[in-house]
Length: 186
Figure 1 (cartoon, rainbow, N blue to C red):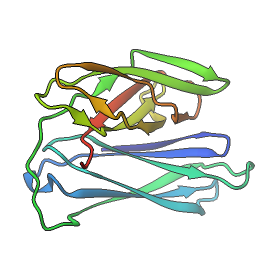
Figure 2: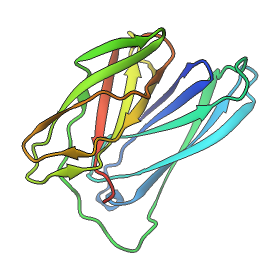
Figure 3: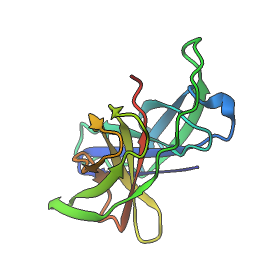
Figure 4: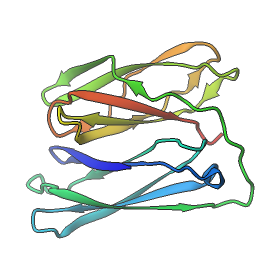
C-alpha cells in the first residue's frame, strides 16, 4: 500500500504498509525486505521484518529498524519487497478487526524526537495480550516520514489503554501519526 522512512542521526526506520483482500492470507506471515539506499543508489544495508495477517483487509504495518555505524551516512531512499508465506501447517481463523488510531497529541520529548499518544479501546469480549502496534508518522503532505512500534502487555476486555511509543524515529516534526494495532501471536 505504502512505504517510507525516517532518519534521526544514526537511527533509521523503514515503514511498509501491506494489505490483503484474500481470506486465505489470514494467519500467514508477511515479510518485508527493505534496501536502505544512499544518494548514489547503493545499498547501505538490507533488513527484514515480519508480521501476521489477522483479518481480511487489514492494513499491516511492518516497521524495520536500521542503526548506522557511520554518523555521516544518510539514507536517501528505500526499496521494498513484500512476500506472504505460511510457516506452519495450522490454519488460523480471522479475528475481529482492530481500529486504526489517530494520534491525540505529538510531543517533542527531546530535540528532534517526537512521541505520539493514542488511546486504544478493546471492544472485543476477550483480554488482549501482547498487542503489536505499528506506528506511522506523516508530514503535512501525507508522506511517510518515519514511525516505530509498541507492544502493550494487556488491554483488558472493554477497557482503554494509552499507547505512547518511545522508539519512534522521524525525519523532522510529524504533522500526524497513526497507530495500527495487531494481535500478538500468543
